[in-house]
Length: 259
Image (tube, rainbow, N blue to C red):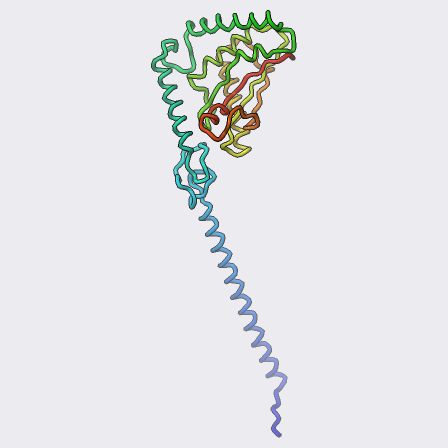
């Protein structure tokens, strides 16, 4: 019978050699895993790249160059109805500036004394009728609130357009006609197109813009105690399924109440 004898040194060398091979295999596997992870991360980053910052990744964005701060649909494009309405509103504002003889120097933020006087006389008579009907000292200000009109806005906008100034003048006349002891709230609203955070910020920005416009126009009125609040899309007055409904929801409302 033949017996093979291995020395301890030979066995040791064999073990060391196999240990190095195992170590090299582990390192190689780690490199492969790291490379795979980097490739996955790069692919994910590329897939979620959003050039126009509208919340829709470029890979799924049918309109990758949408204007800033514009609400888009799931495919990254604006609702065609919203685009048409926005265009109509802009055209209406341009016509108001160019054609309305009651606007001074073609400036949408100023109206002539003729326009203010006509509105003032009309509203003062209505305020007087409310006083005779309900009494301004009561807690019922429904009659007065019914005199006020909302201020409407374009898609994603918080700028008061020329066509909305009559609503502001109505409010100023009503406020100037009221005795002490009333409270005024300016409430901003949106449609449901944007996210909760976007709608909340936009609704507040609209209310603040209206307050600033009122303060600039009527420096004699103290607006320090006026309550300004953004309510996002929590109080819709029309369906958000149609462009016309969304337009009615993009608004700022005024609420008069007893202190």
